[in-house]
Length: 259
Image (tube, rainbow, N blue to C red; front, side, top):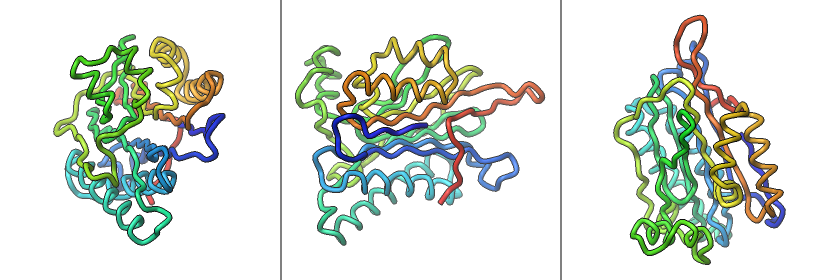
């Protein structure tokens, strides 16, 4: 996973992280978890909000004894409250908020939690598709048939969010049941600094040709070459079969331990 400030912004308001427990780790029962967050642009302390979301979701998910979907839901609820508490205690953080997208991979199943307009994609057998819906004004207009995809990408209000952690509407979308992953599947979490600068055909080609580390580096490079107009963050998880055991394993760009 990688995060980059870009070429225009003065600070990085994105946050990205993941954990892949070892097989003998007590947290292994909860599987792997990847999280990306994008502090609300133009708001105070967006970087603070995204870091709170990242740390809280990672911590709360792994300390929960609930099933994955319930653990993700509670992690988002606690993260939202942590952002609100910080904003109430610090006038400099008043009004801050953040997107947050997370995927937990448990026993070959993927569970998704999402709010805002960061995205989670799946690459399967050459087909690349978005698994999340943008909680944005333009995203809703596109789904309602009021805008074409091209018009949505160029719309001046494309960054106006309808839901976010710390915002009035802060309820996340959580998949109640996991969907099966297959050998060779690739999951990508990213902020709009990636998908807003690099087209889907290019992303698909990179994910098919490169390993997760090199793909992250190339995506950041391409985002900067396109102008680097926003912070850009990406995490890539590849499901591979272990030759010795035949079991599935997750490869990512980094391994971290919970806070």
